[in-house]
Image: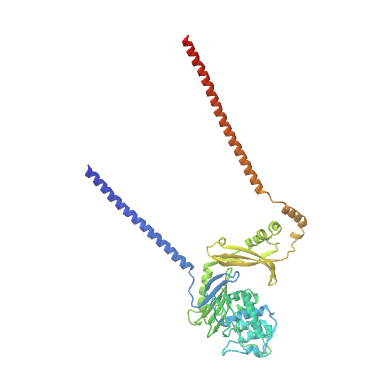
Length: 491
């Protein structure tokens, strides 16, 4: 009997051990499979969101509307910009002159040139309009045009360069210093990929600059020094918009840009591109390979644009933001009298938030700031700023503008004086005494509770008293019967 029982137990133990091993094997397999899946997810995630590797030493991609940084590589590393300097030259000229002004080219426009420097064949004493001069600056990268424009606007090249540095500082450039108008090498003439992208962002938002920078070819007019006109048109050097002998670099979303090269700065390139409602500016600097060798500045720029357009998307904030800044933050009780059409406040029409695809705008932190005093910008009154941040980085921002409104909805259709009197009367009423009411309710509850407790105690005492009285009566009655019994027995 003992042997049979022992064998059964042993067999049962072996079966359990075997099952346990199988179960453990399954669990280990599941565990390893889970690890592999997690690793594969991470690999896929890294593949999807990994930043592209580029050949240029520094680079930066910005969203034009918001200023959000979508890509950066050594973005604050100081480098020599070469001819992409001319983006700032053109911007300053556009902001400080009209396109039909006549620029007279003096000897100063041709001073301090390097051998073989880019030019448009302009002659001393030649008279050319500001518009055509800027086409020479941006398309032909003409160094004499930069100097002639600068002297015309500021009286001297040095005074114009001072304006360039002031503008750079106003745009938020912290690592930039210009020493000339054209980008010819000087030790104290430098910028960064981020700073020149900021400058490019400001420039492309100007309509005149955008038109000029995006032109493939331009024919100059006849002048006092060239009665027949130029023999050849000005040609945009940027291969992504005007590929010429390099069709592989043409980029369908390119809006224009500016090239640059010196022996010390190497190749530099600023490019503008727009796809859908996203407009980007890309700056790459210090790229050693020229156009005929790959990788180069063009292949880097194309790679960066493709990455940003694929990985990011823009969410417009016009409707939600306009409603919020009117109703919640500024006008409060006055908001019913304002609609999207009649409101005094508005933001940029193309304002949006740039986020990785699949990330909701709710994940971004929103901030609305109002200034103590209105600031004039491009003829508009800016009274605040609406911004969004995601993972510590600003991904969208827009100014809040104030425009005086003569809408009859406000001045004629509503008796505002009566409404304001009512609003002031309502606002003057003391607030409801919530604390006092709460204290009174608590006190009343305590009194009721104590009263109920006292009632129950009195009730309990009354019951006990009645019980004792009944017992005593019953005992007295029983004692009388016992006495009667003994008396009767004695008889």
